[in-house]
Image: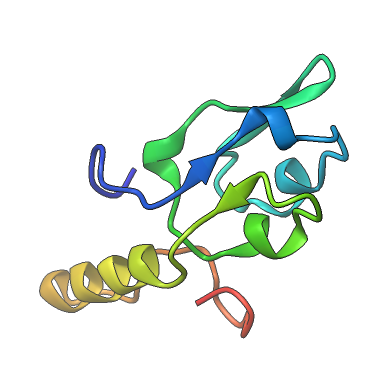
Length: 94
């Protein structure tokens, strides 16, 4: 979890077409499939990489890209560690 209740991730389940791509591409398991819709189960785990929004064809998901990764970089700097955003080597993530 990054910071509680600050994610920019927004989800409109009425637009969900149950493709499941958000579940597949999310590196932090923020979503799960529940019946015929995706369900937002761990919003505070969202690192705001934008993968879900980029793969959501009907536009059910929006997120301000990069905010969570910036937090990971800052926390890594303060702790003297590498950023912990699970994106190592993935140019499309952070």
